[in-house]
Structures are given as C-alpha cells and as structure tokens.
Length: 363
Image (tube, rainbow, N blue to C red; front, top):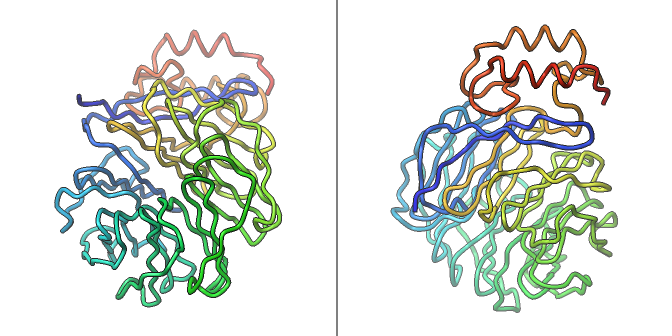
C-alpha cells in the first residue's frame, strides 16, 4: 500500500510542541531507512528498493538521485562535508559521492552481510558496521575497505570514533564494544542497558547518547556509565540525534518522535499523525530536522525546533499585536506556511480565528 509523504512544520503551544503537516505531493511505498540534513539545509534520504532522494531547499522539493546500486536496499546515508557522502547497503555494498549526490560509485566491501551505519573521524578514516558482527574500516576515504574482527555475530547498529584509535560500537542484545587501537581488536563492555541498542551519538569526548529497545540513555563521562533518560513515551527508540549539548530529537515505534531543548533533562512528544515506525532522525545546527520511517513516512521541519508558544512568530515570549501584524502579512499563503495554524496548507480566516484565541498568551 502506498503511503503519503508529508512534511512537518513545528509550531508550539505553551510548554508543548504541536505539529503541522503538509503534503509535498509524491508517493512511495518504500521504507525510508536513513536520512541526513546538512548545515546548508540540504536533505538526503535512502531506503528499500534503491530509493534515494535529495532536497536542496529543506524539503520543499525533492529530486530522485541516480546510482549504480539498482534495487538493493540502502540503510543509512552519511556526509563528511557538503560534497562527500557514503551509503550503507546490502551485502557489504557501499556507495560514495564526491559531488553532493549528483553521481555515485559502488564498491564491495569485505563485510559478511548487510551494512547499517557509518562514522568518519576524518574525511579519510571511517568505519561501517552491520549484520553478522560485520565491521569494515577505511583509511583512504573509501578507496579500500578492510574487515575487522568484532568477536561477535550479532547485528551491529551504531558506531562512533573519538579519534583514530578510540571507538565504540553498539548492537543487539546489549552489545557494546570498545577499541583503543583503531579497531584492530574490539572488547565487550557492560553498560547495564538492557535489550537491543539501535543508535549511538557522541557530541564530544564526554557526552553521548544511545537509542535502545527500552529507552534513551546518556553518558557524561565518555561511556564509563550510562543513565536512562525520562522519555515521554514508553517505547522502543530507534534513533537519537543532538545538534548540540542542549537540542536533540529521538524517534521510534508507532510514530514516536520527541524533542529536548535542555540536554535531555526533559523530553516533549511531537504529534506526528502516524503510527508508522520511524527509523532515523537528524537535527542540524539551524535546529531544522527530519525523521524517516516505514512505508514512505517522512516528517520534517524547516523552522526552529523549540518548546514555546504557538503564535509567537517573533519569539518575543508573548503573542501580541506584533505577531498579529506578521500573521496578517502571511494571509493567503498556500503550501508550507509558517502562519498556517490548522495545517490545511492555506493561511485564511480560520487561522485568523485560531490566532485571535491565542492573543495575550505568555510563553
């Protein structure tokens, strides 16, 4: 069954986050497994059946990208800069672009099975992990890939390197592996995190996050200890991504999507109007984000991801006459519109009535 793909604009009610959904006008039945949003608001997403698309305008329009991977499923996409990017795929396949996705080359790594996630510590040195305990490593920007012995056959979902030598890999059944020699050897380490570990991100040598089967976890000491965060929904969380030490997103089963603006001390649910499983999420330095998932599900924002007040268009802390003037300037807008309070793709008198009901609100 085909599923509509929607874009999401985040507006806000006092101390909550609400969602406005816009249909960009194309359909897909493919699971969209991986996504990324760059600092310049270029977005990429990849998925099953060779699905690969790119937006140059923060999701307003999308273009299909040609590639040599045929109909093979693609699991994640990772850019080391604005032009050089990589895709993990089935059976050890790895794609690379050096021109922002205009063209791609395909290589066959020695991985024993499908690959899932990348991390590059420099533009030359990177690692990719996947099924059957597979780890492959490059020191020449993907020119060649070398297999590393993980010591496990479980599915590996996430990887991070702090430098050329020190790294962490996470995976199923609480698998948590560390290396201090660039991956020549990997050693299991107990974390106390139960179940499957699906995603891993570190912001610096101390602060890191894991999305897992039973929650989202945080470390402030480089992974020596991990603490469960208080999430708004008790569900499986598949991905977590922070733009900085305070602002982050997480996504998971049944359309679960949550935002934090205080480093994870508190999380707020985002209404997504979908029950599809969300597989991946990213938030860039401008606090614009995208989440993708099963059956062609996309949720994205190209406004500041905040917890504040709906109608406070100038972020002054109150909904007042200055915001009314901004709203009136947007009357008649169609499509993706900041002032479309009821998310029906047009700013009209219905939105005006909603806005007038918000007048006087303090954030």
